[in-house]
Amino acid sequence: MFESIREKASKKPKRIVLPESLEPRVIKAAKKVVDKGIAEVVFLGEKDKLIKEAKRFSLDLDKIEVIDYLNSSRFKSYAEEYFKLRKHSGITRKQSEEVIRRPIFYAAMMLRNNEVDGFVGGSINTSGDVIKAALHCLGVDESIGTASSSFIILVPNCKFGNNGLFIFADCSVIPNPSSKQLSNIAISSADLMRQVLGIEPRIAMLSYSTHSSAEGNLVDKVTEATDLVKKRRPDLLIEGELQVDAAIVPEVARIKAPKSKLAGHANVLIFPNLEAGNISYKLVQRLAKARAVGPLLQGLTKPCSDLSRGCSVEDIVDAIAVTVVRAQ
Image (cartoon, rainbow, N blue to C red; front, side):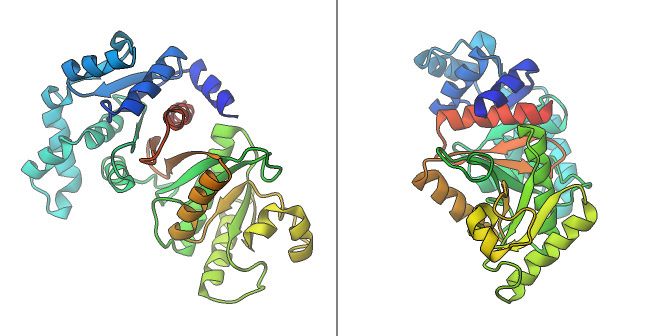
């Protein structure tokens, strides 16, 4: 699956800016991306420093555009634009310049101004910083209404989902989503499944209850979110509330949800809160040795991807490839 995503990206490469250009894993990933024609890579930083680091990893910088962003002609204009975007929060022009000195924010402003087609960061920046840059500089897509994130998860030797392929959401943005936000997360994740993976989404809205087997406000929230999705997007196959075993294990679903059209075959898992989503993806990644690509930021006006600070080189390559496909 991930090879097919990389191949799809290479058929129509897009410009992707990598703001963490001195990080060894990013340099190694950029070399693979350039060698395979997955994307046109843009680095931010001083060229002299980058030349030294690139030599260590046999990266040909002639194949990569390097922008010394602090001395760029666009720095002042980006800082002024950021000031206008954020002045309602009380920020000053001087503070705006300090913000744009941070490569992750400069990269987000490049994307806002269509200088690039996407950005990928987070190997050394926290998810909070990456998400803040994306939200402040890009803004939320009004047709979606909620910024969130998803992971593409591939579990080896697994018969559940699509032969081990899932989307998990939300795992990094909204701590305790409302029912409306939860419905928006489900729609964004389903559309990503179709757009990037070419697979029909089967959405399970997860809870500690299956079809009213338990009660509580948390159960009600998930049920309400499911109803909102059904009204807004009748084209989507969705069910909730479901416990995770009823969502992905057919044998369990036949007992707990015998009349369900989806139960036991879900490939998009929507978690009721950030705590559940983040813990679940990390457990699956580490214990089942799954590949986890993301967090892929969704619900924004432009495509961009966060990375876990524990990401591998291959994780970065996959995140770049997915971002290219979304930009296509």
